[in-house]
Image 1 (cartoon, helix red, strand yellow):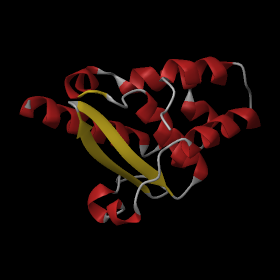
Image 2 (cartoon, helix red, strand yellow; image 1 turned 30 degrees about the horizontal axis):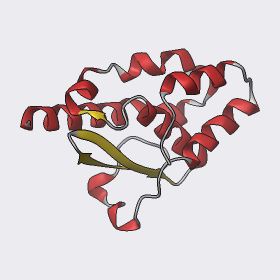
Image 3 (cartoon, one colour; image 1 turned 180 degrees about the horizontal axis):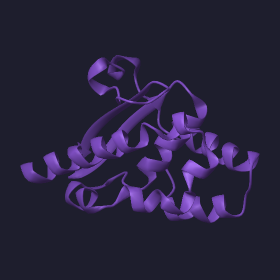
Length: 138
């Protein structure tokens, strides 16, 4: 299962309100491919998240692909939202994407409690650093 592009997610998000927006995020989180438990280690854990979040990058044909999971449904949806901006794109392209800007229209801070969004900058930084590292290696 592949994640929809972030623009498509926003088109749907914009039509919804309140609880339906939460449901959309939860459904998006369910679209993440399963992450093997063996990859859920201290090394793949994103720091600063109130829930546990793990992100594991892989490269297929020069494109970055992230496996990710969380133990909280809404948080897992936010993780999926971040990944929908970068999934399966070339590392150099991902390194140039302003994920914070891509997420801005969702106004997550307005809709979610602070502890749900506090780890988002750390996850975005992890994605960007990973992309820069892979882009520099090619």
